[in-house]
Amino acid sequence: MTSANILICDLLGLRFDELKKPDFSEIKSYIDSKGGVFHECGIDTAPLLEASKLHFFYQPDIGSPENILNATADGQYDAVIAAASYIPEGAKLRLGGVRIGAGTGNMASSSWGGSSGNGGEAPLMNTPGINSRATAQMVFKAILRVRPDLPVAKLHHLVATGNFDTRRELRNYPTEKLEGKKLGIAGFGHIGHELASLGKAFAMHVVVFAREHHKESIEAEGFQYAETVELAAKDADVFSVHIGRGPFDQQTGRFANDQLIGNSVLSKFKHGSVLINYDRGELVDVEALRMAMATGKVAHAAIDADIFKDVETGALSGPMVPYLSLVPDFSDRLELLPHAAADTDHSSRVIGAKQAIDQIFNSIKFKKVTNLIGSLPLGYSV
Image (cartoon, rainbow, N blue to C red; front, side, top):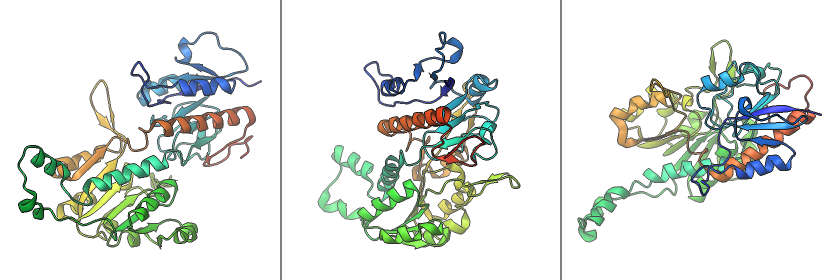
């Protein structure tokens, strides 16, 4: 019989319980129902472990990559389930890892060959599509914050303080509806698809850049297919990125889509456009965005990316950091979020966690890999 120790290093429930703590009870019950054992502690403080069981160690506050490395560098755990936490290269996890969500840029362990999943001895998996609808809805929330461009907060303040006359002053606030505006989308995965459908519901003209094999399905649903990202961006009123970082290039030392949204794309936007990047912070060339905002080509930008703060030094890190340099000049035209769009929905996290647990069980007990990222290690099947 198989025994294994699995580290869970992120919250598995986001809704608060009666003690005002994130509720993981549904996941604990799910693990128990599958014959696993849930421990609300680390392996170093756990009681004597029952043999022939999969033991899940819930450590959502483990924190920094340094702490995760200390907990895994000697092979203390066999596998990991993570959402936002960064799993460093030196983490030894011989039986694999699952990312709750689609992107695996935070899954850098050499046990599976880094974030691309190529070349390791263990499988790297993800749970695509779990939080797609929540993310797409958050993207539209960002769009509706600035388009139509009615200054809601200002008008509320004027009305609430008794300083507005509809008859005389409302004429000073003309707007234009979203209907007929061009929504450019880079990527037609789960999130891009959901967003395109929302755009269509608002009667927007939706143009999608994606790999050619998506063309037929894009056009079948009434969207326009663009062969290049520049064509999708041409005269866009709103442009949203959902393409992922792409494969890692060992020669250049970078991911294929990093800084994809640079001057050649931004210059194609309609003047006064809106840029949304709720994908990966690295996809946008921040200096090119600075110039586009300075000229007014981009009127508003909404970015959702990881940011981390060292508890001892206060030093900031993560893909959000370069965007902070835009704040002094464009604060009122920016919306910066800490990778919150997809990671704050309770039901999505629970569904994703259950799927990750299923995949861990199948991979460890039966060598059956679901949602493989990269190459298939020896001894496994899909």
